[in-house]
Amino acid sequence: MPNWKDVLSEIQRYQQIHGREAKFAVDIIRRKYLKRFNRHTNRNIIAYYSGWLSKPDVQSDINDEDKNGFMMAVHKLDKRKGLDLILHTPGGSVSATQSIVDYLHQIFKRDIRTFVPQIAMSAGTMIACSSKEIWMGLHSNLGPIDPHLNGWPAYGVISEFKRACEEVKDEQHKIPIWQSIIRQYRPTFLSQCENAIEWSNTFVQEQLATVMFKGQADATEKARKAVEHLTDYTGNKSHARHIHVDECEKILNIKRIESDPRLQDILLTVHHCYMHALMNTNSFKMIENHLGAAFVKQAATVMVPNQ
Image (cartoon, rainbow, N blue to C red; front, top):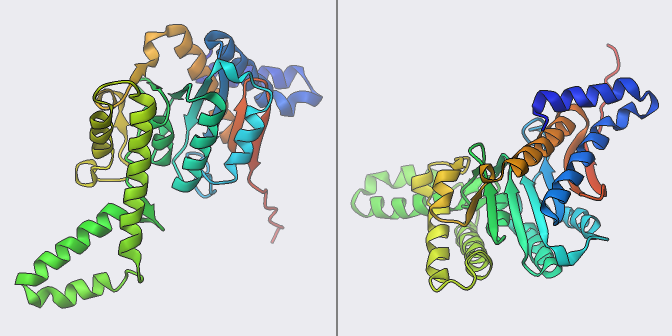
């Protein structure tokens, strides 16, 4: 199957051969391989891609508007065949994530597999943990699921506040130092951090216990340990930490992409197609099924007049 360079060459050949349709080459080639992926798995395929890697200044996080994209992608699918979700996202809103997951579970009766060809971080990891199995390769990464509020790490805020309380008990000369730090917190901010932690932890733990580990005698304990690992603020060091497949296998139901060479080839070709689309067009978010129905968000092109 084509690699990154091969996909680009195929797109360029199509553009050279088909004059007027040249602008559709990226879409036509991508959809060809999505259909091949569908034929290989005999399951419904929906790809959810954000372009934050190539367009970091464009807001491409998971949000409530994405529900419209998933509703469009679900339409006309054979719901009896389950869903294979190809996921590439930096994360986003927990509330939107929970709503999307609930919707997909109702449609596909929790028969959902998630494929991570490269990265699914934060709320993207939450979506992956809501499926019955996650397919990852040597190149795949999940991320910590510790919640952030307006860029502030909730676990970090709580940890810092506890540290402040401990230090000023015995070292009151540090009170002015900590006052300057704590003063930055708006009213009720600590409570909001605690609620965000409880909300995200409870959601992921319930998903793991009732979907991924469903029917296992130790499902609740396995779910608790997985969430504990994914929210380990001290151990993970950073919300941006990339958690590799070997580590994920210890806490989650992981299937290796490399175990099915044919699937690996098609999946990575699909991934290359989306990367080319996000890098070489104005698109920054794409939700698309194997039938070719697509919900695409595009960044506006700003014309700058000559000075």
